[in-house]
Image (cartoon, helix red, strand yellow):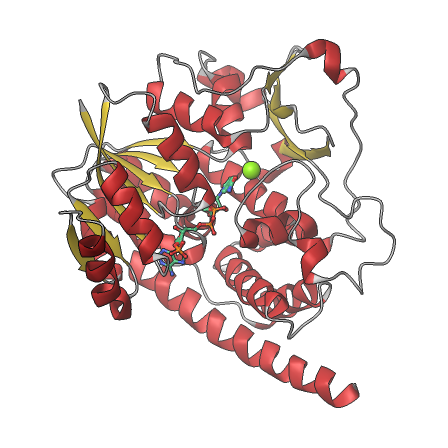
Length: 394
Ligand code: NDP
Ligand code: MG
């Protein structure tokens, strides 16, 4: 029996993880869950899974969490604050940490789980983008096991199993992208919040859904693949594959391409990460090939979706460019979802931040966090100025 902690249990990945854990009560015990603001939902999960500890990362929500637990007769202990989440990630009670927090808010707990040598099922791609080599070195040094939950990276992991170092060194990663809801739309300047928060194939949290619409998500995934698999950016390509049946491919020296396929359901990648090196059912309906009929592939359009190109540029620039790009994007998406800037302004913000703010490469977690903080502050000022300008113009 292994003890599991889900960081971000109320989110899309969190709920998919609960769906898998529910199938294996004899293998996994859900020990603790965290959320930020949805404390009522958190309490319900705590009760349903009889967890020992429920944590809200928002300190102002502690009383509300305690009340919600008491109201439904749940005995789980309640804690609050980002530090409590970080402590949980390193807790000796926990064997498996599921990193399903959204955004750079997940960085510290990812590092804490790695430092404590945990088995880490990592969905929080922003912590790989910002943590980069430092995170991967920490995983290695501390004997942690990092299983990528992001579907493309989970697929790459599967396509690389059993290959030699030499074979990997000559291989090329091909990430597939659905292309998002605006693949064929010419003018993106008037995209609404409603339109950008509906993905054609996947049901996900709001931030990653907007990232999928701008293709920033694929850009973050290029950076994520660079560090997770230690592939240089020249050997990481992106192809648009609208059906989302192939999640990623690896092309080897002999021209053979290994592709990983499955229904677009994150329960598949979570189940694989829990079971590896074994496999067990994820409770997902298997593909019906007679109904698929066609698989299509095309190049992404970097003119209409420049943020994908910025990710490659950030890797080339090195330093802290990926951290700055990630922070600018998070603030941009937030401002877009608040109706303060337009859809295409997110890319404008990312670009001006990447070229306008170039701190040196971080050497510690603290430096990563400080660069992220400074980048956010600058990006926020930019977004505020921009939205004022838009208001004046209208
Ligand atoms: P959601 O928005 O659905 O869920 C986010 C979770 O994080 C919620 O539990 C939320 O709590 C919590 N949270 C929000 N803000 C904070 C904060 N400041 N500190 C601590 N916790 C916080 O996101 P997703 O599940 O879609 O995505 C989670 C991560 O997984 C992201 O990094 C995403 O890129 C990645 N991912 C997601 C995929 C998907 O299919 N959804 C696919 C591949 C990767 P509350 O509910 O209380 O707000
Ligand atoms: Mg993905």
